[in-house]
Image (tube, rainbow, N blue to C red; front, side):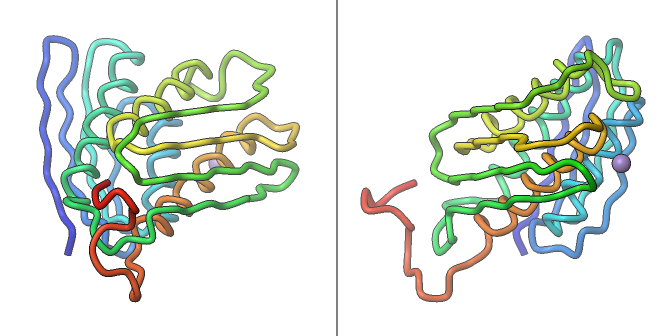
Length: 191
Ligand SMILES: [Mn+2]
């Protein structure tokens, strides 16, 4: 079982994350931001990580950023040497009118490209720029390469939710084991 626990306390926030990458998608997400809880819940359910997150802090932006850092680093710790993994994963996920694509490479070279057309500044109780910041910060702390694109859609809640589901499915694929792979899935000999 690939598990990890991580806590981070600063003058701005207090975050704790506990996870099992080889879980069943059982989660308890407790932050003061309802839409963030909803999206991190989607990440857990569709990537099948068992995940406990507790976060408190002074400002929403700080909480969003620090949850992304701690969650990303906890995944990094659980992944270990990344030997035997499929390494790549991708998904195209619909949610009613919305269609989103995510593609991930678990090589430890952080690069994030997010191509989304969000016409509104907010969704539910979050600023859209904070959602984008979450995705960026999360991927950079895993670290991995992540490309995200919203292919179409009208409803902003659907569009963002489809993105999170696509990221979850991509990660699940990428960190699953390839039975035929011995050692590191890289011609360099390291990830
Ligand atoms: Mn929803």
